[in-house]
Image (tube, rainbow, N blue to C red; front, side, top):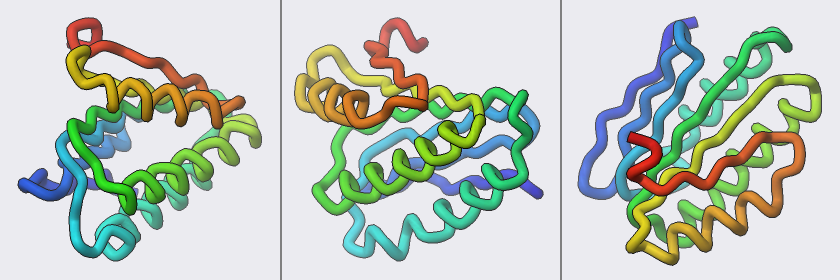
Length: 131
């Protein structure tokens, strides 16, 4: 299974899933017109990846979104639900929610996502700490 790479644009974040390191990055803004269509191949890839993952492999997902619209927020919830299900099945998954300290809304969104996840390790990280 190869990695997945999507270049960032003004409206969509860059997505880099490296199968070799098990470190995945999602970075940029997310407010496309066709959110579900855009993220469908990402979900398919991640689901297949998680299905083939062994329990002892650690997966780190770094998410750094400056701005995202409500449909992207729903997609993120679906993504986190998929990760939570995998973590409850024994997968070792860590999400690092990287936020700009001046962007209180991003922190608040991260806190809301954090509260919904129990099996996934979810870290709220100011941008300076993450660098």
